[in-house]
Image (cartoon, rainbow, N blue to C red; front, side):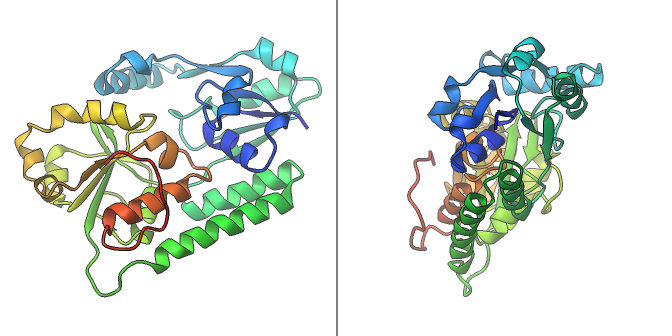
Length: 300
């Protein structure tokens, strides 16, 4: 089977299922595991996020979407030469991957047409279910079942370690810093499983823009900065302008030194197996007094 994955989480899932040799094409953002970087790239982005500020990226995204322009383009010529049997994409977010209609048109232009598997999870449970769907679609259901069982056990271990005799800290997770966006979808659920109470977002709802006033009034005791697509060092850089704002200084998490920069791409933004790593990280940040459930490299 020849597999084309158009989003990083699908690439991670395919490799986790032992399908690395079957992956014949990826997107420009597919960087894990390292072997994924060696695959032909059939997707390109239209925004240079490496050399743009968060505000500039947000403005460019809004301009292109409002003008009916896509944020990504498919290399149809290369895709036709590679001629995959299955294309794995998503329908969750126009900012995250090639538009679903464009993928369907591209798949239909292949000979024979490629099967399209679209993943659109809104919760941690649906992320795990999508791993099973990928397994079924690629002839590896047993591997998928074993992986999901392992991930569920880790989730249950985190949830079971939450202190029952003390209140849940108020937590805010920010998916973008200029403008501010509260992380939605699976993140509030992860906060709850890790023993916190998300004060900005509701479980399984999309990420939403929030004002600095709203953030300050929510008075989170723990803040986790996880900008979409940014690693720890880039997050720290984008965080700097916020530090001198009076509203920021009044937030309890800031006053108590409990603001953490994490690698959003690795552990929180991408709906794949490493979300469980992110859950374990959240558990350590929210309840540092509890025994560590895992060891990770992250910036705090």
